[in-house]
Length: 336
Image (tube, rainbow, N blue to C red; front, side, top):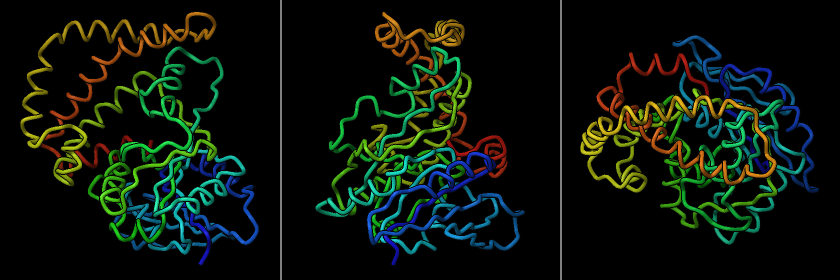
């Protein structure tokens, strides 16, 4: 058996995938260790055709119909020969010690473990204030508040840079492919792993990759609405996980509460959103007052963030499994 299998689901980003594979080809491994790379190409073939696999040197490419990120990962897990699964996005570029660091962290663990590494946002040319907010706050990830060697809850398991023993992933049944095309698929998987083996998510900041995915203000709000829609799906897929995240036993009651809250201060929230749209597009100046400005803008945006999430949840609640909604959603979204 190989030491580890690197799992990469991909959809529509061949240039970034190539860059990711190039970095994986430069990995420095300890003597006796070896890795394989499995690329699961979502929507590589037409719906209804048979999936196929092609091996190009050390990279195995699985050509799949449009199945969503969870099913794509599961197809790769089924083919994996490594004792450890290393997860990475197709737009993340690992440093040369990334795989070795994950492998070492897994070996040091006293019991089967979920490990998450550090994912840095790419340094963009002419950064905006919004770029700084994404980098320095918990708008998307929580890295800025995490400490090396500490253990966190299942919501910190992000498959852009994570690892888990292969046997554990298979024992819990892999990722739930009903969470399609993506969002909540990783944390729901981690919830089941944590229920199976305990131990939470261990953070190793030395397992570093760079995320080549620039998120703008409109992208961010669109993502919040998508999170709301997929939270509605999560309420059906795993009610216990949904309850632990959102504190609601009844998803319909949450929908009703959100519907009521959406009517409160709606005009003020829209004015705040309009003002923020202008502010965050300005050039980033990190001298002097940036830490205070960053904190202020983050707090200012929270009502807007919540409004878009709540709207997504309300919109998606009755359409959770509707094929028309799902196909429209999948046609306009790629993996984060």
